[in-house]
Image (tube, rainbow, N blue to C red):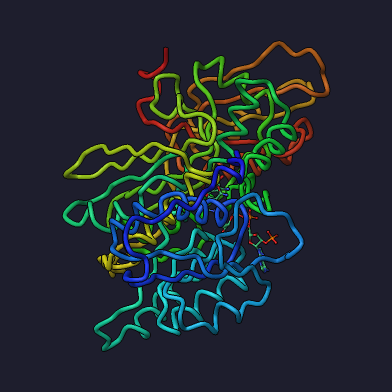
Length: 458
Ligand SMILES: NC(=O)C1=CN([C@@H]2O[C@H](COP(=O)(O)OP(=O)(O)OC[C@H]3O[C@@H](n4cnc5c(N)ncnc54)[C@H](OP(=O)(O)O)[C@@H]3O)[C@@H](O)[C@H]2O)C=CC1
Ligand SMILES: N[C@@H](CC=O)C(=O)O
């Protein structure tokens, strides 16, 4: 994934550089994304000069380890440092780019830069999701009464290379979004494809995703669904004006998936994808979740493989809008950061960094769906009857049951597909079933993504 460093050449500018005003940049992070940003700025230097009438220069890069070999060419005159104050105390820097990751030091960096009147570009969804109201309050405070306002840009934070943030900030102002759904984590989609299509083990798939620069520094964020949840929180604010607590969004990752789940999904004619959904459910309420979901073979998301992300927006005016593209990795992510940087260099203004909050919309942590429930069991008499009884108790109507012939009496599994029922009922059903003697380990459940899934079956 890394272009050989020799290929990064600083092309001779055709414009008279001395005459050009400078846009000076300090970058926190010289890893996957930071390296990509430097490479693109250097390789398109002349083009950017023509486009902005300015010379765009990366002046300083903060890293953790000065001795680490860099897989990009450090531009002439650019200082690599471990001292945050080298950048934060330097008023000659116009744009501070935070691509270091984390939510503590990165938060300090972003706050200090904004307070100092410097524009900020970040790819850090965890940071934004954890601090969205605080960042917004700070931006408002810093900009109060000022003609020259600081800008906060974060296009790369959601779905890497897909321009979803700009689109939600400016293309849906006269529209009402009823549903946002899609594949919003590249690492897990890459892993699920590797496991389902290429027969890789979970560990092989994760190691490959890390090597390709898709995984977070802490991959638990990816496989646990938390990275997707951070992104969904940002999307919910942009689309519905709600600042939901991240922890309130129901979140399940891919760690509980087994080969059996893929087998059953195949038997039903589809596959499993880690999906983020936010949906208007009536009365101004919005529900959301991150979860593996069953998708049928003719669903548009079925064919979205590898690190590709896809976001589908259903809205009153535009009906269905789908954005598909690379959601992770060096160049897709750096591409979004570059778009933010060049837009700032050109003096473009964002309509509003986070879109206005809505007074009326409310978040609810419940939704209705058909569900796939897989239960591992130790063979015993009366299992189906007991399942039926617990289903009846919680109003969970069974659509169908799937079971491979039992080969091992102490390690077998079957799956139930429910009719459309509330998540809360499924949780109660699972909790009670897990208490029964024959049930082995936790029940696994996931929604069926589409309401018309049966007609979509092939
Ligand atoms: N990779 C991707 O596909 C995407 C990443 N992002 C986001 O972009 C950000 C960066 O990701 P990525 O480039 O992949 O991460 P990497 O781990 O590749 O790079 C992180 C960089 O930050 C430096 N760094 C980390 N912690 C510190 C610290 N405490 N002090 C100084 N320097 C530090 C590291 O220094 P050193 O090199 O010396 O260790 C490294 O250069 C994250 O917020 C991530 O969520 C967003 C979209 C996609
Ligand atoms: N780890 C993230 C990187 C981009 O946001 C992902 O895989 O989507």
